[in-house]
Amino acid sequence: MEHGVEVDVLTTRTKNAHPTAAFTSAWPDEHPPEVSSIDGIRIRRFSVGFYPGPRLAHLLSRLMLRRWDREERRLGKMLTGSRNLIDYYERRARERPRIYDLMMLAGRGPWSIRLLAHLALNLRRYEAVLVGFTPYALMPAVVAIARLLRRPVVVLPLFHPQDIYHHFAVFYRCFARAGALLAQTRYSAAVLAALAPGSTPIELGAGIDLEELTAPEIDGARFRRKYGLEGRKIVLFVGRKELFKRYDMALAAVELIADERVRLVMIGRDVDGQPISSAHACWLGEVDRRDLLDAYDACDIFLLPSENESFGMVFLEAWARRKPVIGNVSCGPVADLIDDGDNGYLCSSPQEIAERIAQLLANPQLATRLGEAGYQKVSARYTWDTIAKMVRDLYSRLGAQAAGSSAPDRHAADESADSRMPDAAPAAETSPAALVKSDP
Image (cartoon, rainbow, N blue to C red; front, side, top):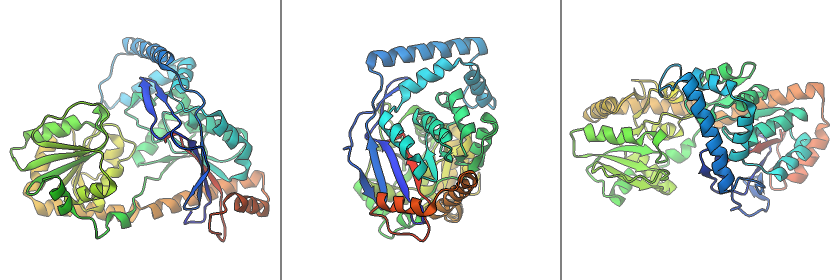
């Protein structure tokens, strides 16, 4: 909006989609159905008309898991972290009959006929449509509609290459048919190009609000007082508490450190429900934004050894507070984001993590140098203003290409946009875009 792009958001009424089985999700109506406007962005929510009940959900998942068992018996099972893992997942995805792709899409959702119908009826009023994410059904449906109506479509895959749940041939075809793919790192762009020949991945990344994260009212001492952490050396973990985030590695690492002052502070939603019993860890669950910003300021080191990420926003947030970071070398996007030894470290085991934590705590000058390098990287490349300019330029290029074959009446389009967006401030030149979201 700040760069002259008018945006409509089409999304679901779901606040928290939740899995009902291995391959199925429920999308309850939790938001009201009215059209709202936030900062001039018009948000229209639609009910999800179908998602499988418990019996169908378990049936679909059993059929899918049996298929996976047959694939593993025929091709073998490959360990996470193998250099050939993505090729292995791709082979399985391409050899899998399409019926399994359809079953996965049916179960995963969301399926909102009203949302798709509204998009189809109004798509010609927009110059581009942006849709995400893997592994949800809305993305292939929107790409198909946009291609049918000859409107540029941009896909934000948020693709996890190490996650087998993201590897289905239907997504590869979707990537290849999009006008552009927004990749978070060079690694992700290369993976997407290999999986979807003919696609157009663009290394974009993501951004942070640097002004928010450097605000003078952020107070790490307040966080320490609130949670009884005065005098502690804080290693901060921010992420959902589920296995692929590898919080088990973080716990094991702090157990190996012979320093009773060290505490692993964990912030994030409890997904797996497993208790945290370590005397060296403090799990806080979900906290408000002020506490989270204070936590970044309070910590000595930021640690997220997750093995499946599309990017790693939390590393940017920690860097904004000039903190050294530690990530998992086996996670390609994170390994591409962190410059090992320059603004953080990449590790492969609890032992390595423990060694790096001890090194940073023993050498505050080193920790300061790595944190400052991270801050310089964020401020130069990963602010929302920088990202917004890149996306605006992409929309302009795609819109110009589409206009070459069918030039719209720009005056009529502007009048239509004005009538739809009464709360938006007038801009000298605008490019309407539809953003279709599959997450709540």
